[in-house]
Length: 429
Image (tube, rainbow, N blue to C red; front, side, top):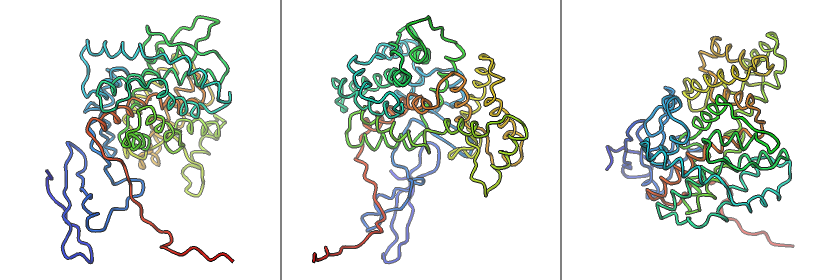
């Protein structure tokens, strides 16, 4: 039932068009424009920046005030008190699990981390120097060829099995992409390790020596997974929902999300931070200030990457937690003398003290800190977006499950046609 109605006056119509207005639990109200087509009109909203495409109970963002809630819980509280596995349960099911439910879910994820051995053959079909995102996109979609025993998306049990499989297997596939790229043998997952520990083990262990997992590194990796797990109706999540609206299987939908995430305007921000640091090059104060001055010059194409955010007009709430984690990692690994990291820390200081950045609210965002952390952990730049995909899988599959559970109609955006009207095919001489 609509809370109230809006009236739209259109020249040529005898009476205003009444459009229902609905209110969510928080955030802006929405005007339901579906009835406009009955009057021969539809709305024009490039990028869908003013259009709600769905109802959801998963994530809420208040960009003006720097708020990010998952199922109502602030991200700062979750990052401090929870872990990736528990937050995955929360996103999927709506509540923090009790101890029994948590252990059941954790065991299910742990026991689904292995992938079918024949998937190794898929990797052999790629060039060794293929970008890991190209490999991940292909192999993730191919999972449906191996795990088609629970693909009846109308059944809650099948949806839950597929969700657990994807959350569990994505770190394994990601680590395999890395190992294949550098020519090392694949490392099989271990059920005795936590989610982030297992990922680091599969990434960096080898058969020649014992690998010890640094608890500070594992904590940082877990937080990166948590802080990137979901971010409302962004481009990749909307892609997963649009693909899912056709009834496509969840593995295909997640593969579509990976493809959307691959775009540099979406998932490549933390890699862009390191490219910027490399461009700055010299850690001297004079050189750093030179690049800061260039960033302030509107006529200069140079931009400081990792500062400000399209959604958050205030401080990115994830950045506060990531800054703390970044400091812990750099101290633990003794990397204070690394030239690029010195540049990063100086840029951070300038952004937090310089009036130019403060007035424009160009604070360091989550990508700024996560890029520094991943570099410190020894993860190459071409793996950054792959790790983002591992983290975001939890959000993607939660949105997909919510959409299928609630029922949806196939997505079919309209267009403002600007091409030729009907014309005749030319006579051939």
